[in-house]
Structure formats: C-alpha cells, structure tokens
Length: 138
Image (cartoon, rainbow, N blue to C red):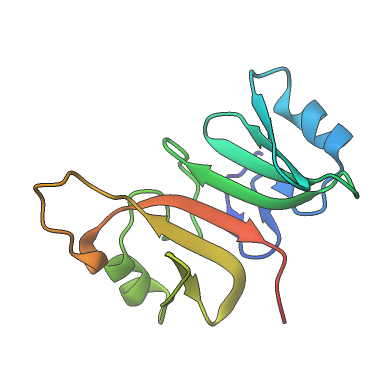
C-alpha cells in the first residue's frame, strides 16, 4: 500500500532524504518534470513534488510538496492547514527565515500562502502552501 505520509527529517511517501538520483528518476516513473540548475543543486520539479539534489553526492537533500498533495504530517497537518491547526494539533511553532518550523520536530518546515492584496493577512489563518522536509540539524 502506497502512503503519502510526511515524516519530518526522513521522507514523504515513497521518496526519502538521501535517495540516490537514479532511484529518484525511476520512482518518478516517466512523469514529466523540469530541472533547474542552481549553484550546487539540481532542482527537479514534478508539479506536486520538488526535489533538491546535491550536485556532488547526487542524493536528495530536501523534498518539498505543494499544490494538490494530499499527504499529512502526523496524520493531521497538510497543504491547506493553518498555523492555528498546527498549534492545536501538533504544538508550538516558530518563524525562521519566512518559513515556520516545529522545535519539537527537526527537519520539517511550512510556508504559508500569500493571498490577494486586498485581503487582511492573518498569520494563524493563512493556509499552508508548501511543506518541506530536510536533513535534521542537531
């Protein structure tokens, strides 16, 4: 059974951190993707998944999901959830460089949607637009 579970600092569904590039390409299963080259990273975008692959090791070092991704972190928090949902269901969060992290769960962050200009932006009520997992920093 395939799962879309998000595990902080480890995996999202069948994709995991440190996955070799060759294995990643096999798992994408011929679905269309774009590659953008950055300074030391290849960014592979499939639409709902974005993979950051280290140029030296050729391994995935970050996985980001957005748009229509239906998976959940802790079976509760997914795309469209809010910081209020995180506070109620998971606990404390902090802002760090325009993303929100969970001190009690290393290796995951959330980015909020930036809704239209005429709407009042209330941080706790804005929907999560992107969820990223990355190697835990101790």
